[in-house]
Image (cartoon, rainbow, N blue to C red):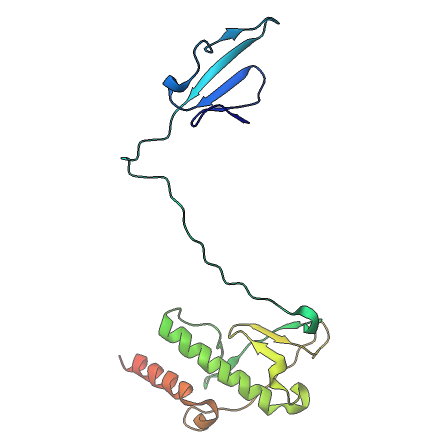
Length: 191
């Protein structure tokens, strides 16, 4: 594109000149000139930028602040294995409930994540023969995804870990979070 003046821009499309700007800035005699070769050059006037009194105004300069971090990938782990993990509880009547499902409100979600994290940590510590002693080579997202640095099982293989837990006993293993959840459940049952 060639710039003619401060507000006028000419396109390179043959036969058509587009001026962006006010009509008074356009050169005279260009509203359909005929050239020696017989071609006609048309001028199209584009609307100007709306006045600044309008509701929306052109944005001026703005500062963009970005955080940049240098990552050293020379020590990166080659493979990470993803597993699906489900926590379920067997009720007194024999039915099973998935502990990862529940209400979506903030308090219930945070309490559920804390309880699941504590159960996950207890699971790692309870079966050292399967998981090993390095609990930092695993990650759990408090949902259904479980990641490990080491290959634990073959594709399609399943393993079930079970341990007994009663609400009135063994709360010290799971911290105060489980007792908080138990108190919330009792409040919901009472009201």
